[in-house]
Length: 473
View 1 (cartoon, rainbow, N blue to C red):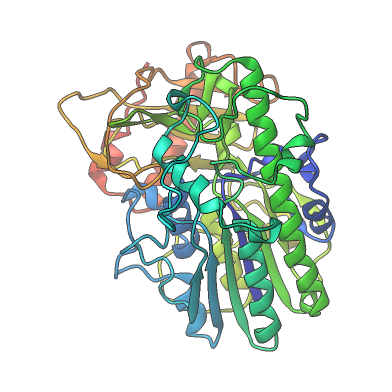
View 2 (cartoon, helix red, strand yellow; view 1 turned 45 degrees about the vertical axis):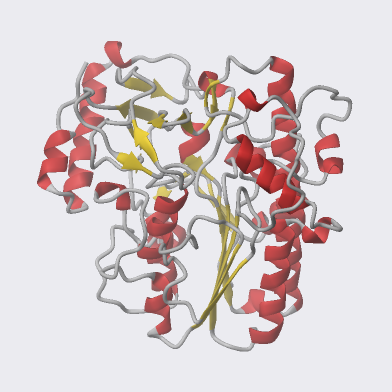
């Protein structure tokens, strides 16, 4: 079978109609879900962008041994494994970070193509002066926004938007190569900010807004924004989601036109979500000019969409828990690609075919190798509805350089100093608003013991396991 994997960066699960959203237009993804396996409990492993791709490419939970960083020569990626079985492979992306100099995530592919211009990519130098759409202090990186606006002036129509370019290139590649045995990896940065969809998509959700347009907001507590500005931010994001739906829909249509649904596995997913004021946060972490802090990974971030089409598999919803490295293991299992690479991922074919559990909990985290130096917390979500989120005591004497979450060099610092353990029971508290850790400590201890076994099974360094072995509070 052929394989197509599509990643849409920062796509919130609850913003798709196939996951219950009733106000954002996503008919093409919804149509695809009706012929696919829809996973209701897919969770990220490593956070954010680059670590997620490394999980996906290697089938490992890389947060247990490294940070946001390039692929190493010791790691074998899925393109190489499939190449050993005669697969022609192609990497097409407009996501800037994995193809940054030296990162090498295109390694192992037969060919690769990067669509230039996303975020702060220095694609053009003119015009020198660019007017921002809101006050500088509301923007996470005003100069990066200026560069993006500068790049956008090269557009003539919706076909020139980055997601559109990426999906068009994927369609053109399929037209020329659909008779081969192939692996196509397609990665679009949308709906990641800066949010700049055609404004008619924004108008679908907030037509009469006249205030400032905060398209790349400062990450962290959202006090600096009015409720009306947050409402419009949500409209901008919704517009991006609709833009993604339209152009991913073009790719789905091309797959159908070429008859590829007869012999091609198609995966559609994301790397994480985004806070739009939930938990009093904007973004997915906490950032100042010099420092990078981490925020807890609540459901809005960690619980992701995953749709998988397998030829002849009956469409249905899958309740069992799966994580990103499991996608890799499952693809290799489906195409019978034998390999001698150690993986943390587990094939979920038994879950699909026999409803046999492969996991009873999920672990999601940024890199844990430094402890909680940046305010890191680990999120453990169980299949009976409990979520434990906990960090470690902070050591002010240690500092580490990081490139999370955007590739910029900053010092990790616990800007969110509340490392108190958190425990939630999702059936009663889906918004995770009431921390019940102190009234349910025994339950927290039980979940914590699952984490230690998980880290041990993943062959995590003993020093790191010992670091996280104590549940404070």
